[in-house]
Image (cartoon, rainbow, N blue to C red; front, side):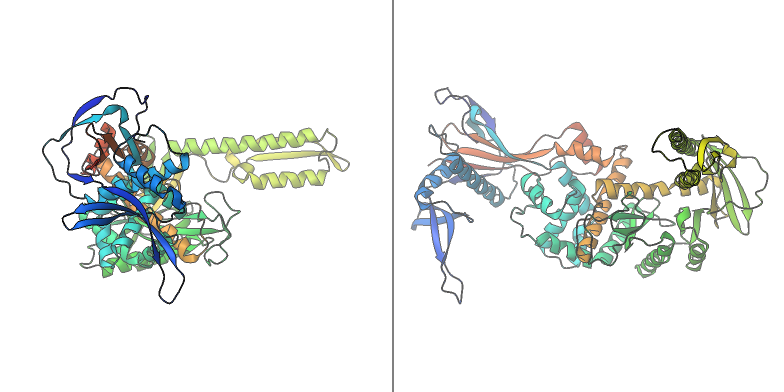
Amino acid sequence: MFGCPLSPKCSAHKLKISLALGTEYAIYGHMYIRAKAKKNKGSSKIYYTHELVESRRTEKGPRQITLLNLDPFDLHHDYWKMLANRIQEVISGQQRLMPLDEHMETLARHYAKLLIQKQFKENSEHQEHEADFQSVDVNAIASTEAKSIGPEYLGLEAMKQLDFFQIFKKLEFTRYAMDLAALLIVGRLVHPSSENELRRYVHQESGLEDLLQTNLAHLPKNALYETSDLLWRHKESIESFLRQHCKKMLGLGESIILYDLTNTYFEGDAHFYDKARRGKSKDKRNDRPLVTLGAVLDEQGFLKTSRIYEGNISESKTLLDMIRAVHTQAREQQPPLPVEKPTVVMDAGLATEDNLSTLKEYGFSYIVVSRSRPQNIPESQFVELKKGIKVQSFIQEQELFLYCQSEAKAGKENSMLNKAKEKMEQELVRLRQGLGQKRKLKRYDKVLERIGRLRKQYSRVSAGFDIQVHAKNHNAVNITWSFNVHKLRKPYNGSYFLRTDRTDLDNERIWSLYIMLTTVEDAFRNLKDELGLRPNFHQKPERIEGHIFITVLAYHLLHYIRYRLNQAGLYHRWETVRAWLKTHRIQTSSLPREQGGAIHIRHCTTPTFEQQDVYSALGISNVPVKPKKVVNQQK
């Protein structure tokens, strides 16, 4: 780690460097390992703890200073002196002509690393000093403990700007619980994974410990689960606080509300979770039990509230519960939200007549996709709203309908139509060819049955096919068909109807508000693909819902970061930004000194231009952690 990579006989290269950092000098005396006998109250059983101890001379005489707790420790007593000596050599930058065996060398470097980390933590002040020029051996400079700090820094600063720690303090979280909550939420943002994998990541790859100035290396097995439970218990308070804080800080409006559902599947069977049900999976995982997440967002994509439902729940049945939640939050907020008749935007799956009546009852307006084609559409000219979008509007029974035709939607629909048509024709060709082959389907009634299944499978295009089966005796001898696109149940011309009670809005505003539903789709894509919402590996109800809620909290960070980046003209996906930032590292550089001993500096690498742009967009420093320095002098 600190040894010269060249021959021991080579001349060391010297370099004078400037070290304008806060410095802690440690002049170590004789080190040794000590075992201390202990026993618990009420028990006669004796056990031992092991410590790395240093003997120092002081004005009051020799003193033994405990440097490090070594447990767990199982090295035979005969090797303790050798290990202590090697630890002292490593931290002092001394080289060995005769290396120790691999196990002893690994132990020595491990404990030396812990001792240096302890020195960094004890040297917590970051005072600027005059330049400190030292002469060091450049051939023996080593960099260790390099960890990712860029994504963690951005996530933690977003948490601070959104005042997460303020609500944690109000909820009387301990400092330890706050640190673990930050680990869970920022961890879900930068490294979506299980709790066990997150423990490994923060210990081996992440610089989050440096940012939080805490030690997360030896987390108890259930610590993260217990913190997840704690967050879930305070879900309503945390979401309400974030809603109010974001609105006040960013000047967000709440006149437009977007609502939609998504679901996620379980890898296990989730037998003990009542909401785990079989249903139609949006991830095409109908083989697994599901759970559903409902989300309400504003027109900027900021999350207002969320709810967890059964996996097989109908979309239309969840709306009343969600609207009540938003309505209650708006009324109870102090001061009350100045909302004048908010408008809910939702897709056709939720736009039932019952749901529209409920919205009106609670004082909400609506913009929805009509579930059916209006009757008696008046003859009028389409007006081009923007390139590729034509609309015409009309009023029926105090509702405004917007008849829209989209070239892009028409292209997508025709592509899907042609694909389905080609697949069905391929199946018909295969079926017809089998009529002349041995051991293939030939019976007339079975051929008709097979065609019926094909019509059900390709229902999108089935009505356009006219299929004739020619029979002889009881067998089919030929199959012919033709296709007429005009016989399909609906025109595939990219048309759809929007429906609203907001007759005060012009056509462009109505259409643009509806297009905001893509914000919800984007939010759910972030939750699933970038923040690890799917799949869910937990079995206990509170752990399942805690996992989902942590993902929702990570979405708050992600969307806030993206919002600030967009304001600065940066429109990259989070995956791209995260990849940029992961190359920003924090590391320990160790420099053996000419006069003996070694300098250890914990510092961040210089940020790239892309990293600086991201940090600038959030108004934060380019230096995540100020450098720290300790000098271990050889006695």
